[in-house]
Image (cartoon, rainbow over all chains, first blue to last red; front, top):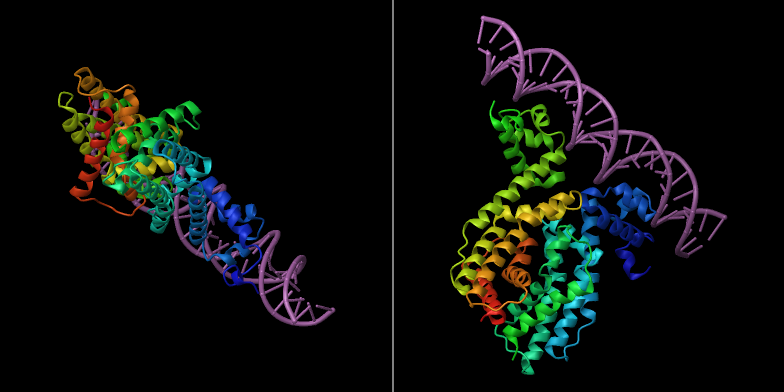
Length: 204
Length: 204
DNA sequence: GAGAATCTAAACTGACCGGTTTAGTTAAAT
DNA sequence: ATTTAACTAAACCGGTCAGTTTAGATTCTC
């Protein structure tokens, strides 16, 4: 008996989660039927219900795992030692690459839509979304200030401002369906503009 | 026969729209049942269906009207003649006052959630939401640049950046349910920070 | 290979929902 | 006062969905 057997009672646990993720992300919470999920997972409905007491908890688990996964991935490529313009440009591209991805959008949409039905979901997403970005940026900014490369009084505010600057123009267009993808040039315009504005305020 | 009788065939048209708005904003598109709407509107289901061929079109009409109404309201108080710090601070407070309102939030949530089911909805919201803000700001910035109070190369980018700066920190917390309202001090911190950063970049 | 745990397919329950219909009532126009 | 347009309440239809049950098949363990 392995350790996780206490939680994952059977061998098809992962199949269920994978199928649920796929269908939930495609159709949303209400749009996804449990029969669809079971079919997608290649599992009987009874098996699914032997793992999760109801649809709501299955959804929560999918969302939680997905947020976790993305937070980890986002944190992977951070270099605290580079000078501000370079580091910020790089962070911005990573950040946008994620929130503009199909997966990132779907998760955002789902969290916004369902976060009053599932208050935990919103909090969870915030923790492993905006909060991760803020922490990563803050620690970089702190290091850069210590090196005398930046001058910042309110570190958290500076981090949040930079994140917001990166979304200018593009994010609303994406989220409300006016565009579905952007050229390198469009992204560079925003990122360079964000870095420029940030440096104008906080550059040493 | 009045002019609007061609469109509003009967006397309870407004009742239906009012009831629909209330229920849709409270429960979302899927969550709202037509029976609920009819009950809330104080109207029979048959009457409701005599005005609108189906639930989807009723929803679209409610959303359209609501977006229009808010766009008009937002544009009311703009003073193109004031100096940047004052004008921007004022715009920021108006802007935040709206997007932080209960109504503003609900509409945003609804548009995000349903804008792949109803592509028109997203576009409509964008036109009478972000786009209105951008146009208003752009025209102010243009005037201020002409007066020599600001120096801006990409007007649209500057406008979008300012709007984004105003949402730093607060907006994600609100939208993901970490907080439901903010103190004056919390808002001032963000608005002042936004104006400061904007002026650092674009001040003449 | 026996027994226990896990899984399956499919039928079923009970509830809800969008939309229609019916038979009759209220209000407005002439 | 009569006609006509708008409205009502309630039953009804076809369909979907979450969740349960059943009877049996598969897989794992020892």
